[in-house]
Image (tube, rainbow, N blue to C red; front, side):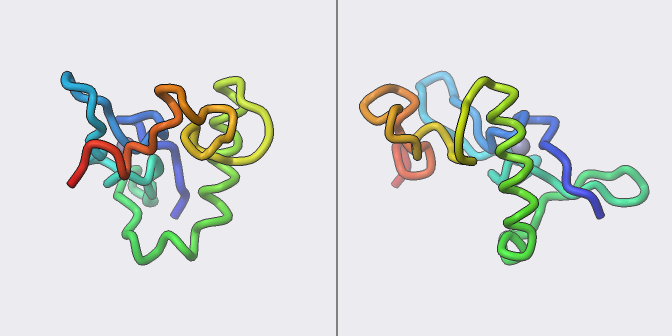
Length: 98
Ligand SMILES: [Zn+2]
């Protein structure tokens, strides 16, 4: 089983809806990455398996961030000190959700 970037959210794991709150991507259930099986089907990575594939996800995330022009660690924008206080500094997993 290979892990690929989610085709639906392009690795973000979520979308911003029209009122500006984050909603998890259904395709990857918020991971930003999915399994691709031998038959070419994409399957969400079950949450209980995240720990097993953490290193691989981190490497994929680092690559994605490099593509987007970020340097340094594999961090989501809102985990980066430099983004604090900007729109990207908000964690969509905690903001706008009850
Ligand atoms: Zn997705």
